[in-house]
Amino acid sequence: MFGAFWALFGLLEIICWGALVTPLILPFAVIPRGRRERWSILGGQVFGWLCTYVTLMGRTTVLGLEHLPKRRGYLVISNHRSWADVGMLMYYTASQGISKKEVAYVPFFGLTGYVSGVIYFDRNKKESRQAVVTEAISMMSQGANLHVFPEGTRTRDGRLASKVYLRLIQACYAAGIDVVPCCVWGTDRAVRAVGVHALPFQRFGLELEPPLERAAFTTAEAFAEASWARVVAMAKKHGADEPFSGAGGLEDERASSVGGAQDVSAGG
Figure 1: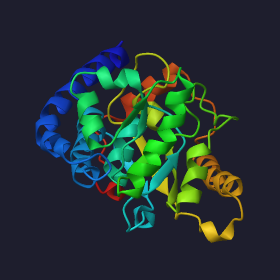
Figure 2: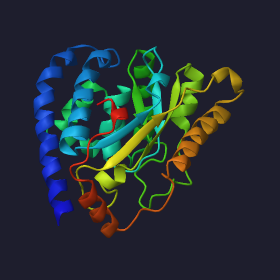
Figure 3: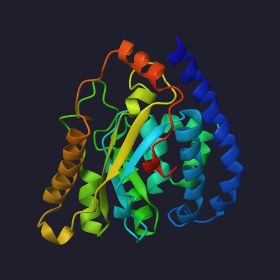
Figure 4: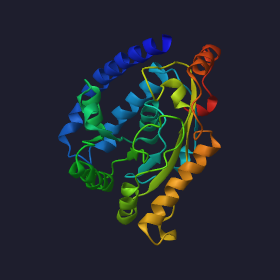
């Protein structure tokens, strides 16, 4: 019951955060897409911080921020365990994501996302899925940072998907764009992957590794597979490739964690 209440309360808060941030970044909409994101993403980062540390009151561990490229216009690839992944990635990696078109219609949230760099697409249309790669490469080539979940959707059982979509990573290889392997863990404790359920004060984290050197690979396919393999290795290290615990375990963890301090390593 508490988890369902907090999920609905959190959704209302997210809409409020969108209403707060949208007026701040809307003036950047006059700048062409692909170039405006180097400034408008600051609004996305504020939004991500609010979601992670105000709505969810997360206790985070963040590792490897020094591995983010100094040159703008990179792609972060990550496993996907929960909606909470998105806010944390926006805040810490200064990147926006690729999302289904339905999200664009969420009040304020959809508009804030678009202006700060989200690419919306129709999953049911092949031409829309193909256009995403072209648009993403164009935006990153102009300095926008993006993140993507090669699994395509959130895990439903805690395990990494056996089928992943690496076409955008392959396109980055051809375009000379840096790809940063990333792993998230524990976010499913804050926002469950299935159902309407969220809990505050949960412990979760994120780790980044350096981009692979493209010159070490002779094909885009080999580069993409090696980049994803780095994500898989980190996920296994952090227990992010294991079945989810039961609902009772999540409620017990909430009770034991309320009132705890945020980790020093969070940086947020």
